[in-house]
Image 1: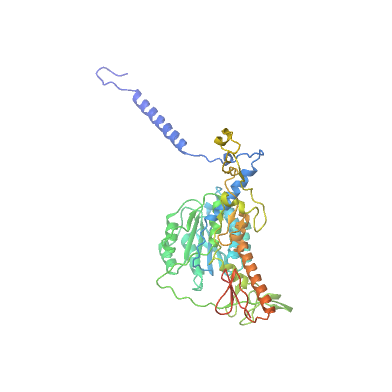
Image 2: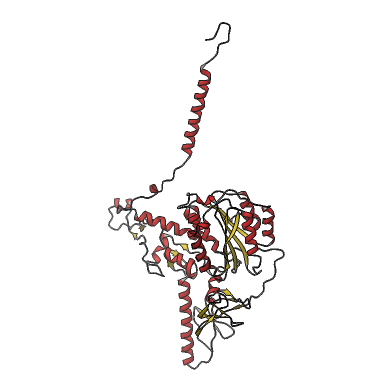
Length: 493
C-alpha cells in the first residue's frame, strides 16, 4: 500500500503496456496472414460439361507443353564438342525431405535422366561425375563418352552405404578436382562444370576466390542449381565464369522445376567472343564401320576379347563402342548419325506459331499424325433486330454473323511459318525435341525432288540432252542445273 506523501503509482501501467504489445503482435500476425497466399491446386480444377475434370487436366497438360514455345531458336554459334564435369552435393543437407523422397535420392534419379539426355543431344561429348562429401571431393566416374559407365556409377551411389550424405561440402576441393579433370580437354571443345548445391555453406581448406580466378583463366564455365537458396559464393562463381551473366544460376521451386533446370544444361552453351580467340581450324575424325570377326580378338579400350567392334580408320585398332577416342592414335571415332544429332543445335528448328480461330478452318486434322482438331466455329446467318421488325417481303438479309468460338481458348493448331502446315501440340514437341525437322517441309522437298526427276526423265525420252523443261517450283540457272524453290540444287545430265 502506498504511504502518505509518496507519489501515486499506476500499478496497471505495466499490465496495460504488455496487453498493448500482445494486441500489436496479433495485428501484425493477422496482416501477415492476410498477405500470405495459400495455393491450393485442387481449386484450379473445374468440372466440365460431362461432370468430370478430364478437360481441365488436359488443359493444364497442354499449357505445360506450350511452354516450349518460349524457347529461343535463334541460330547462334555453340560448342557441340563438350567436356562437362557434374558435381553432386552429398553433404548432410541432402537428407532434407523438402524434395521427395529426399534431395539426395531425387538428385540421383534426375542425374540418370540427365546422363541419358545429355548423350542423346551431345553424342560426341564427354562427361565426368564428382561428389562432395564430408569435406572432401571424391570421383564417382572418370571423364568418358560412354553413358553406360556413368549410369552404373550413379546406381552404385544409390545402393552403397559409403556414399550416403555425410558432413559438410567442400566447394573448393570439388572445383579443383574438376579443374584438373578438364585440364587436358582440347581447345576445340568447351569446358563446363554443373554444380548441384544443396547446402548453404562450404567448408574449404584454402582461398576459394583464387580457385574461381583459376577457372576463369582456364576458360571453364560454371552452371549452378541451388536446392535451398542462393549462395553468394555460387553467384560469384557463375558471374565470373560466364562473362558477368548470372542466368546460369537457378534455385529450384519444386521437383518439376528442378528437372527443367537439370535438363536445360543438355543444350550447348553459346560461344562468347574473346580478344585472344584463336581462328577456326579443321578437326580430323574417323567414321569406322562395325565389323564381325570369325575369331575373337582383344579390343584396345578394355583389352577384352570380342568378335564385334569398330576398327580405327588410321591405325586399325579395335574399339568396342562409338563415339570414342582411339587409345592408340587418339583419333576421334564417331558415326555420321552422331555428328548429325549434334549439328541441329547450330540451326534449330524455328518455333511454330499458334493458329487463331480465324484461320482454323484451313485444317481439320494434324498434317503429321492425322489427329482431328477441334471443330472451327461455323458462320451462320442470324437476322438482326431491325430486320425482324420490318414486314417487307423483300427486306435485305442481314450480314452473316459468326458464332462464338468454342469454350477452349486454344485452337490446338500450330503452324510452321515455312510450309504453312498445321500440327498438333504433340507433333510440335516431337518435331522440336526429337527429330528436329518439320514433316511438312520435308514432304515439300520430297515432292520437289520427285517432280524434278520426272521432268528430267520425260525430257530425256523426247531426245533433249541436258535441257530439262522447268516449271514452278523449280527454276533453271545459267549453269544448266535445275534449282528447287527451297534452295536445293539438282544436276541434270
